[in-house]
Image (cartoon, rainbow, N blue to C red; front, side, top):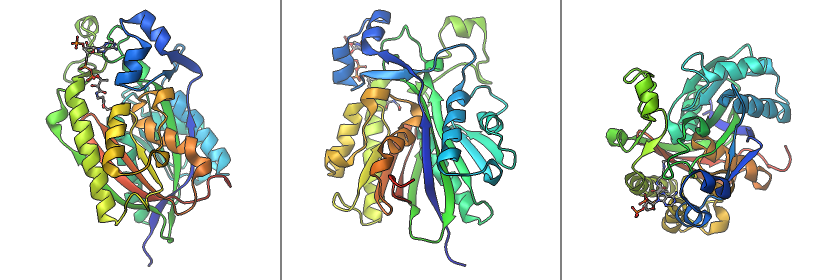
Length: 334
Ligand code: UT7
């Protein structure tokens, strides 16, 4: 039997309508548009407003659009994986909610939590499932409702995050396209510098955890920044070298969108011209697992079959990794 590759055959995404600007954030905490733009590079972010609106709202919409644009029947889906750190509930999974909302009944569905690295880790999981030969159509959803775990009284974190979800359809192919190589890492040294402390089994929700604002993201920004730059540049370099890729034959680099200065450092080390790097942090901020699919979705019409694409992410854990993809279709023809 010929080797099966896992290839992305469609992409969709969903962002909320509400735009939270730096001007509005400046009315909530002591900050300025100038500080946020120069230190982070974010102008605005999307926020999912309203009661009882979990990440499954965005995931459901992204899956719906994906099924429609790829002309895929709900009964054809074998697996639905949802990479998120902000599920609607601990259980049931947001994957099962997004599947149910779309009438997907023949798939097994589960959530996975790898913070901002959720999409690249998710691709590796789906790659393995496709290679078994048992599954023909898999949906990977990745995204977060970061506004649900952001402390809007903390100026060091509240300008950073936004809400979004993306979804890709992944299928087997015998062509030399799709996921060609991956390199993923985890280092538990990241436990303290990037943590949402309470709400899990170690510190269950209590009046005290709420009073102490322990249900929101806490990070030692400088430590996370240093690790993010060094690990993302390292893993990007590794995957390029191993696959004989240079600035000339990489068509697109898609870095996780956490800080423009981190993205700049990766661009410098990769030697790639800026035009080959997908950047939309200014309009969406850090949507955690959502950043990379959101970029691919926005750039879809410019992607060509066979394009060499490098994805690179870094997040809590610490977790990080790169994926080398050969794009599966002409993005303007879908
Ligand atoms: O998604 C994966 C994980 N996350 C990341 O990759 C994020 C990595 N870290 C970062 O992006 C940056 O460290 C931050 C954007 C979080 C912070 O930028 P920084 O350049 O590292 O700033 P800092 O924390 O060193 O703070 C510098 C100064 C401090 O004032 P003093 O102590 O020098 O007087 C802060 O209090 O800036 C102050 N500051 C602010 N000032 C205005 C911090 N936040 C703000 C703010 N507005 N929003």
